Structure formats: C-alpha cells, structure tokens
Amino acid sequence: MSRTAPATSPAPVVPSAWADVVARYLEALRLTHYAADTVHIRTLYLKYFVAWATARGLTTPAAVTRAALERYQRWLYHYRKRTGTPLSVWSQHGRLVAVKGLFRWLTKQRALPMNPAAELELPRVTAQRLPQPLTDAEIIDVLAHAEPTTPIGLRDRALLETGYSTGLRRMELIRLRLYDLDLARGVLVVREGKGQKDRVVPIGERAIAWVEKYLDEARPDFVVEPDEGTVFLTRRGRPFHPNNLSRLTRDYLVAAGIAKRGACHLLRHTMATGMLEHGADVRVIQEILGHARLTTTQLYTRVSIRLLKAVHTATHPAATLARPATPPAAVAATEPLEAPAASLLAAKETAPPPYTQRHEDRTESGA
Image 1 (cartoon, helix red, strand yellow):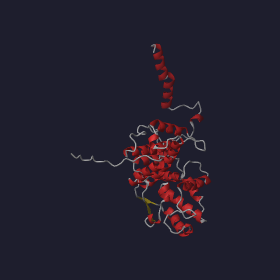
Image 2 (cartoon, one colour):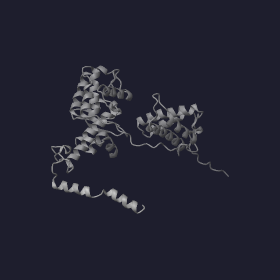
Image 3 (spheres, helix red, strand yellow):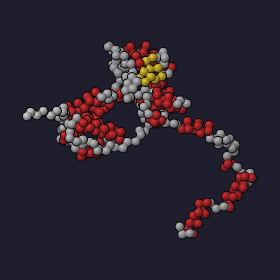
Image 4 (cartoon, one colour):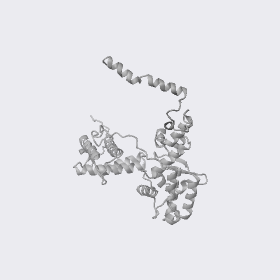
C-alpha cells in the first residue's frame, strides 16, 4: 500500500555568519518598503551589535540568549563616547529596537526556535527636548553671515533661506531636485519625506529670490556631469552628507554668536514657532512640516513666553489697568488712607491669621 508523501514546508533559513543573516534581514526590510533612512540606521546599529557579539564569542544568532541581550543593554548604558558623554536614551532605544527587529524576523523565518529578544524591555524614553527657537533678530543675523559675494556663500544663503522658509527636514533639503521646484507658484514638492509621504510646501518670496540667484549664478560652478538635478551641491558637485550639512548650519550659528543647541532642525523649529506666534493655525503648520499626528506639531511649536504674555494682556481683566503714578513705598506714612483700604487694614489688624487660629485650635484639642 503506497503512502502519499507529506507536504513539505519551505526550508527554514539556517543561521550562518552574521553578515549573511543581517544582509537578508535588511533586504526583507527593503522589500516591505521600509524607508531608506530606516534601513540605513538599522544597518549601522546592527553593525555595532554584531561587533559587540563577535568580540564575546557569539558568532551566530543561535548563540545569543536573553541574558546576552540584557548584557548588551547594560553595556550600552555604561558606554562612553570619545567625548566622555554617555549614549542618549534615544540612541540606546534605537540600537535595541534594531536588534529586536532582527531576532523577531529570524523567529518568523523559523531560523530560531524562540526569540531571545521577545521579552527584552526597552529603555523608557520621554519626549525629546526641543531646541529653543531663534528670535527674529537672531535668524536675520544668521542669514546675513552667509556672504553672497562668492558662489559658496551664495549657495549657503539660498540653502539657509530655503530651510528657514519651508521648514524642511535635513534629508528633505539634501534630496531636493530641480524638478521639485515650482518657484513661479511659490511652492516646492517634498518627495518621499518621512513615512515615504509626498507633500507640497510653500516657499517665501525672499527665499525664492535667493534660490533663483543661486541657480543662475552659483550652481553652474558646482555641477559635475551627469547632472542629477540635486538643487544644493557641494563644491565637488555632489549632494551634501547629512553630517556636513549640519556642520555647515552650525558654523553659521556659531559665527552669529548663538549658543542655542541644534542646527538644521533649529531652523525648522524656529519657522514653526514663528508662524504660530504670528497667528498661523496649528493644523496648517502640521501640513507644512509633514507631521502624521497633530500632537507632534504641538510639541514642535512650543508657545513662547512672548505669545503667552500677549494673550494674557489681551484677555485678563486686570492686565490693562494703569499702574499708580507713585509707587506704594513712596507714599507718606501720614497720608490718610482711602476708606476701603483703611477699613481693610483695620480688619487685618484685629483678626488673627486664619492659619494661626486653626493651628491653635488643633493644639488645644490634642490633634
């Protein structure tokens, strides 16, 4: 009697060298349309983890246990950079998320019988502290430090003006292409921004004027054929590296004598805060910044004390009362008090303070 052979399932992925496993995992992320930035940062974080694991004899994913991952978490907590500063909580969190993602994928692929990272608790993160936005005078000073008399200075002025006018993220500025600009209509298109979403962003007339001047007079000096259409080019004709763009922006902030932390994101935050202070609806700002959730925009557009003071003055019943011409301390002691004030003062002198009376009552009753 012949028996039918049982149906076979696809062969599970067998863990081999770390490089092979990580490469397959990253390819799986790309196939499921993870953002390029996400794949890039996970590549970097997994490179750090593999180096740590290999140095401790953990040469395959099968050798990693929950205890080993907890040991790695403790190592991240105690790690110090060359500057002597620890990793931020957000950095520790991101590195562990990358590791958890790798082992979750390996378990789904049946490469491992169980997920050693399943119950690994991530460090608790709180909302990131936003940089203090620049004042109107400060942002004008920063922009003025980009001398438009040279091609590089003209490029930098156009770049800073665009970042401040549109509130684009650093990578969105770097990826901006010539065909994304519609300067006649005063808008530009952000393609595949955060979350791989496109959006149309307005750009102000002043920024348009500087961008047009840069495109006509400076960009041709930077172009290296074939021209891929990147708007802002380095002197070698290439798109900016994110760190280099941050460094360039930071240099102009330092040149203007500004010690506030941040670089490209500081321009974005300044733009959003300035629009809010001048009456823009927070939902409009949400659309411009490209936030998926309104709560994120409300975090970015922290209300300044200047706006709080203006609202207080406009709405509080006593905020607009005229101050006395003579300070109270300058009033002579012999000057007769007005009747209401005199009666109030007399009442205060004869009546014991409420707290003192209650305290005495409790003391006498044995409380």
